[in-house]
Image 1: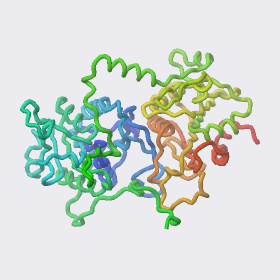
Image 2: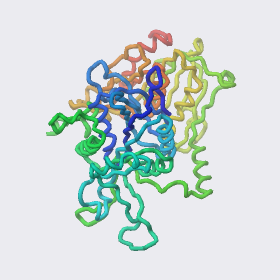
Image 3: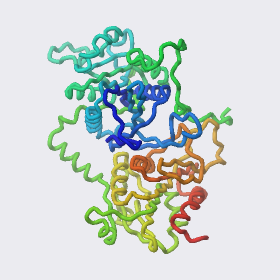
Image 4: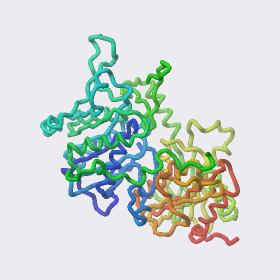
Length: 262
Length: 259
């Protein structure tokens, strides 16, 4: 459940919530790291639950020695009040048997907090794309009926591609199998989306087809894509790389190389 | 995914396991098996009659200091430097079963894997040594169940934890002479000074020390973890001695006999 880290309960009414799904390449989580780091968001609370594997570390967004020793937990909420933006960062895998429980926890927290809309950043295995999906942009979106009512025009203007329904058994032309939503490697993305449709939540999913590897470029692609819609950054700066990489991204692929190796 | 040799391999993701189809389609028998398995994996605390009596009707133990040792070296350090004086009573143990538990050959092995000791002349000091493996779904449960028994006001928690230097990431390659060493992590409520450097980015801790820190951070309890990074996997006296630094703080709060 949500526990405030400050002395009062924060208000999320009317805020936009951006959250990642723990999915292939951790792209959603990396993208959220960029948002929190660049917008210098402040932490307002933790989601304390038995559904995530425990981990702890010092401040991943530290800018100076003074704030470096702040403890951080697997699921935390940050806000940028001036943008009416809240961000949930999830840093640990979901315990395998608790996936459904975690989705329910999220849905009820989103409902109770009064977010005006939720955006889930996610990814899906690139190798599982069918012939149709192999062409064009690797970015896709999904939107629940409640959010579609409000954002249909904005989405149309952006020219985004909706996630296709695919046949359950590719290659078989059996008329009985209807095309269905399939997000392999997306973790709880599909479940969260269908739950949100049922619960009438305003929720959008932004996902990227990718593979495991160095997913930093994928994170940039996804966060820029999100920015096209939500306009989180000031667009007047001409530099392409306006996002700030947090110090926790150091040594993503291990320690320095021992000189004796050569 | 297809390889250049024409085979099709399944791709492994570091982030997600392949999702099972929705559990709703389980039949009654599967549900029964799942429930039984869950029950078997439950963490159960066994307290001495005295402590059980004190905990009756939702009361909590008065506790000013809770010291937890996770791992063989941390546990052995406490046994050698703290518990060796005759001032401690064994007051309980936790039974934890998971897939890594070997078949229990007698009560002894089950009881020694997670033991609680309390100081005789100052019963508000509690020590726990954990040498068994706790699965990822048991960590939160263990933490909640133990802390449920302790009153949180003015509680100080210290965790000594074994780690491997192979898990420690640093830009300058560590030559083996620098291990073993300590790094610290503490909650916002911890106002003392740690005895060693803080754990640098991008390092994190996992397992029981992390579960305890999460609980303490969220419930505003003062807690510190001293993670010892060693290049020796098994019990090792040099590694154990590294925890001596923490004794300076321990000594103050639990009135250790000087030696």
